[in-house]
Each structure stands twice: as C-alpha cells, then as structure tokens.
Length: 134
Image (cartoon, rainbow, N blue to C red; front, side):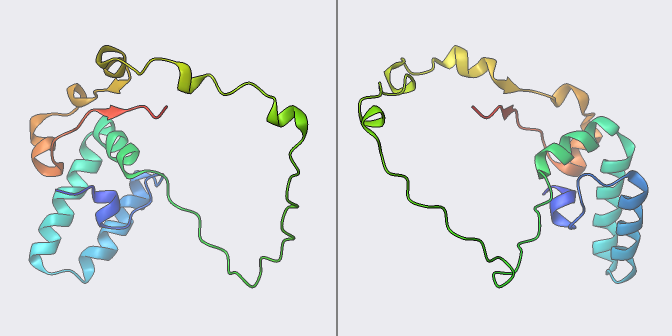
C-alpha cells in the first residue's frame, strides 16, 4: 500500500486534528471502497505516533509552490572569471579516497521496523530501512 500522506495529499507536518479533518473531507465524496481505504489509512496514522512519524519521514517535506515566472525578475549572476589560483588549486579529496565498504554502508542504514506492530504493517505496507544521504 502506498504512503497515506502522499496518496491522499495530506501535509506530513499536519497535526492529528488536521489529518482527521482532511480525511473526513475526502470521505464525504468517496465510494464505500475508498472510505474503507481512508479509514484504514487514518487508523495507521492515528493509532501509533511512531508509525505516523515513519510515514511522515517517508513522505518527505511538502514542496513550496512554484512562483510565477513573470513575477521573478532577478538579474542573472555575472559569469565568474577563473583566476590563476583556481587553476592551480589542488583537486578535491573525495575522488582520491577508497570507495565505501559494505560494512561502512550498513552503518548508515536506519531501521525503524521495531517501532511498528504487525497489524500496522498490514495496513501501510512493510518498512524498508532508510539510508542517510551522504
């Protein structure tokens, strides 16, 4: 099952009351099948704060609206002229380092599955370990 925040267009930073109100609005115009899906999603979000937190993290932040292009009249940045010090600067260190081992990559994995009960996982789907961005 997909993430309820993404599936139903709910802001991940919304309070439980705001989530409940949004779900009620969606249920008013929904069929019986959709109402059952809304009810299951609401129970997954409302029953466990840990699961709501996991789903909110998985959904990501709400994107900011794109401003109209006519309102944005910013002068473009001038082209930067390279100096001799830029051409003679040492190369970055990262390409010279050895690649990350599997053990090092495993240390960056986040596993929150112990916070979710089996009945919650039945409604919202299994948790997958998340990786920290480098």
